[in-house]
Image (cartoon, rainbow, N blue to C red; front, side):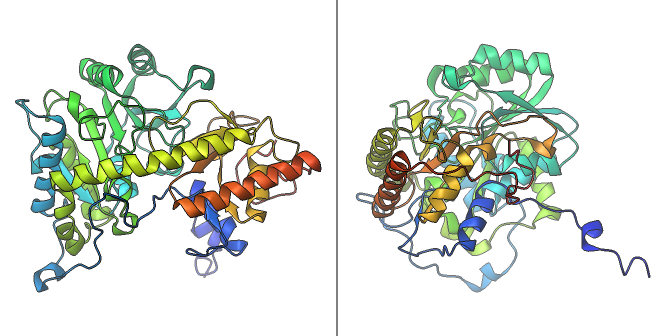
Length: 443
């Protein structure tokens, strides 16, 4: 009888709404609905999905055969795995003896699931992760308890740089079996490319410590460090695809602008791919069979090259617009983004009531503009790292992913909000009485 009367709080843990999920939930409470022209969503990490100038035609329909109603293999259909391998070989590994094959690729239902499979496959090890980084890493690195997440703080005053020599020291001194990082980085836009990226792979090879590269923004490169095909990947510096400790995660979500398809892939040594595929057999069961086959044309070299070039041309203008407008408002940008489609801005020079990330976020919601407070990128799995206040309490992430009209609408409203605060200062909104922040430090 006591089991029947057990309370939900004892039966299920309270699962926090982290990062963008929390932000979108708060916006929804205030009336936000997807597609509402009255709102400007500069928060959610999604690119515009329509036709761009010079981009390949967008997929408008998918034909499904009777055979595609069956389950697909947990690791993905062989045709798509081979297409992913061929694209990476052609882009990054021309003339190299060691080439990726379908056995080096696993398909999953999007990036988060690819990450979850990878995390579930890790053994008892220390896993390094940079600060700041992708908000979803926080819950992901807590829920799987076989490994210990170890933060590697990056210094804003140094441009969020971690040199190959510094990476080597972190791995050796902290005994790291692996390091997880987004490249280009979410939220800062910092890019590890060229000789630095080659140095990272060389360090990993020498120390036999895995680098787990989240490369979901590798088509969004702004500083000229891209390959001839408009993208950057650690795959270019792997010597032996089955021996070098390098794992790559990517998918259709950002780089092909099909977030709703939820098709992602993991590339790495065959032993790792076998492990993440085995995890998939109990964790998720495999990705959509029809959409995997529909993705084959998107992975053709010519299509991928055209999409990457169109993205760089179109999003570059939006990047310049957002940078110029935010800086004119008095928002400080530590580094101009070299990759991804975000601007990482500090509001500490704005008037009282807007000069911390939480207050700015809440005031912006009142103007129907969505942003993401910087505290969510101070990844702290299990809240093990004690701190009275996050280093990024005065930061926010602004996305230039949406269409240009929505981007201009949001920037106009933020500009008016800041102008009004200069004329009539407002009170901060991160009072101790606000309970919407859950475990996020308020003071």
